[in-house]
Length: 264
Length: 311
Image 1: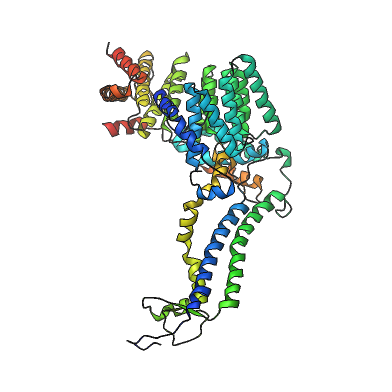
Image 2 (image 1 turned 120 degrees about the horizontal axis):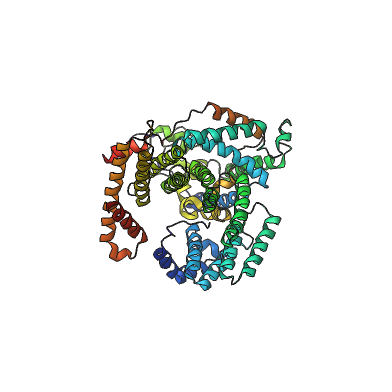
């Protein structure tokens, strides 16, 4: 613990600044930029349906969900019931399924053997890997070369609680909290550079997604309600049940009264 | 059936956009996508390309085919000629400059060919159906669209277009069904609600059965009310509300024995009065700033309706 009122003085070699502080900062910024471009490269956009029947299978479910959510604000009971009957019948008989009604009984494909589902999982893994690998590499690099250096003195006093945050890798009990070790500087860079990246790469990094947006007429068309490994038939049956228990009311009933009230 | 973002129904606005052709095109051509330059160039934004797309539509409508061609070229260069939307836009341009029936038929064949290779090409699919419609083959367009919405049942544009086609063929109930599908997807679109009201009104004036007419007209009144509820000063909604409520009153008076009416006659009268006063207010507002807006058909039609109801 530092003695109150007196300054701890550590004579640092100025080379510490040029050979440790600066390199760590630059490397962290560069890896951040690199990681951004790596994720852009690795990211696989949601795959559009491959055939008309597949698109129908996906959108049939969305249609049911839309009906359930929006029917109250859109249509009368008669129209709702007609649509409900049609959709429930279709869901139960499986006519919306990709393989037609005959393909119902077949067990869902193992996601590990289905290449499309596999790709979805690989996409997630690739994203995680792009995060993890550089971090492990750089941390071991810093541990190997720069462990135990005190490289920086903060210009303001801090409480003792910050000791573990600012002085990891330096096991001295009496060192003032204001001194920052190299490993801690790495952590500070890791978590604190977000705003720098936003400055360098632009907010939201919209350029990467643009080509994708241009590719599709309506973004909803490629949305896939089925996660990898989910059985469409089961989802259809669940949706049929949801529709069956749905109680319909219509916003159209009594609009004229409401209108008269507003302007009355 | 083209994607319209801003208000492209107003001819004056379209002309204004089309006159901006050269600065937008210059901006678009300065965008570089090759590696070293692309880092320093922030102009490559999605807004710019949306602008170019709108410019394309505006130029086609105002007859500026050269600028339209440049737009298509720029878009093709940026997104590749095999991009689905770019393909559809190129087709649109070709349709616009086609001089005779044979050329159009050639384009239609091209579309069919593209779709045979990739049936999932939605923009080209839509272009093909729109071309069928503009070539005067609504039956083919309808059957094509029915297949289309079977595969893409959450496509609003397609449902609206199908509804229009059905209406043009006189199949009002099918038209209503199609538009209801569109409304289910976007329940708060007041223009669709009003459009549904118009279709219900048509259905209510076409059949000979009085009770059925009353049902349709009641629906029409409610749809128009809903559209006004969603959008305060929606001229089309008030116009329809006035027409429909007056018509429904007439239908009531024809069948005197009918007791279980959905909307009481006095309420209808109040609705009609409300619509009239609102229409007058809107009319006054619009004519006062008419000098800037210029010639406005909507205003004239409303004027006619109000004059007719007074006389």
